[in-house]
Length: 344
Ligand code: GDP
Ligand code: MN
Image (cartoon, rainbow, N blue to C red):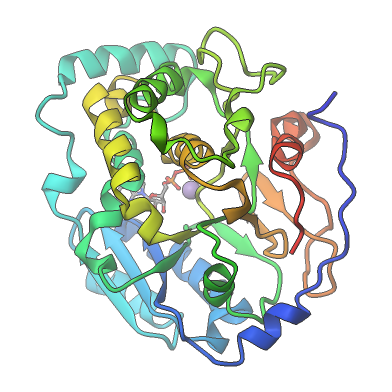
């Protein structure tokens, strides 16, 4: 079985990365988070951990986004968790709310059907809005005008490893455009027409397909989830609650046009397209697979999945992924087989 057969990993070696990070903060990087006022304590806990493991050495600014005005309590609580600069941004409703062409009665009918199939969050309008915003609107937010790379951080996450090198400088030096640390299958009901809609776009822009793409990761025939429901999409995706991103790639004409095409089709509301499968499919088509990097050295948990390397810089259980009942949700082996394994 190509999905479960383990691939042997060499030990972590970050020595060459350390040399490069001696010249601190030469990259326009930022730590970013979208969160709600009620999540002040939870995001402050994530911020503290990222500070302890990484950012206290580099002092990149934090940018917090919210569709509402941040409360004084939120601002005070997260500011106490970092010595770095903090910025608090309210998202314009035009970027957050569903576009005019969305028929809400039709959407709500679809949400009921998804809920009947047990799809999580399907009836939460805010969740659909969040997924759409992260898929496209975040990249053109003026708060990121002077940001070339961001690291996304969520509430209720844990970080286990000391990161002694500058991850943003690493991205830039190695010309990486996307960094992930968990690779998963998705619920096919949330993305029934995402692949056909993406292919419709590609059909109009054949030249956007990168010569060294990783598209076969998205359409693998033997994927356990590659069935009629998702119309051939393997549902493999990078789990975006952790990501380190080259913002220029996602602001590019190619990606933004793809987002517009998807947005017009309406699947953020008529289905429950997540920003993770949207980004992942786009990357597998538009990007050079060698520019996508597994940050296996960043030990991490967002319930119920983890990434934990075998390294004395970490305090988690090496190789842990999920409880046994969820072990079959891991798509990493498939990714490594498609993309090749350049471990550094
Ligand atoms: P899950 O990880 O898929 O279970 O979804 P989360 O509830 O963690 O949401 C993803 C991210 O978006 C988290 O950082 C949330 O704090 C944030 N988020 C989700 N919905 C909203 C919302 O309606 N408003 C704001 N401001 N943030 C949201
Ligand atoms: Mn989350």
